[in-house]
Amino acid sequence: MIRTYEPRDLARMIEVWNEVVADGVAFPQEEPLNEETGAAFFAAQSHCGVAEEDGRVVGLYILHPNNVGRCGHIANASYAVSSRCRGQHIGERLVKDSLEKAKELGFRILQFNAVVESNRAARHLYERLGFVPLGVIPGGFRMKDGHYENICPYYRVL
Image (cartoon, rainbow, N blue to C red):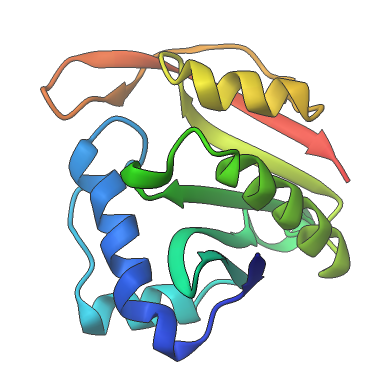
């Protein structure tokens, strides 16, 4: 089940988010969230959705404008799924929900700025769901171990 997050979800959302940050291969953030920074971070988004299974948050997404002013109609989103639950199509359900929510909120495009080229599962999912690759930014992402990998921006008209 995908639903809007509630304050009671914050501890688990922070845990799942921090797991992806600690992996160092998908999110640009390097600092983990704590109770205070996590609450502020998630509250600042246009929308946060959580995937719940048996009453437990197993994944989430954040949705917000990609830019301001004349580009404020373009949304950006990030997705996190607990490592124990990957491979169960939770990410796909999160992406589909974010597309619907972005449209509801008046966004016209959903854009991903920094999909790491080696993240083949995410890239395959995005392309299967109709996202268009915009090219490659050479060495645009510094991996946890310090080497640089290409990033592949994507967009989809809503």
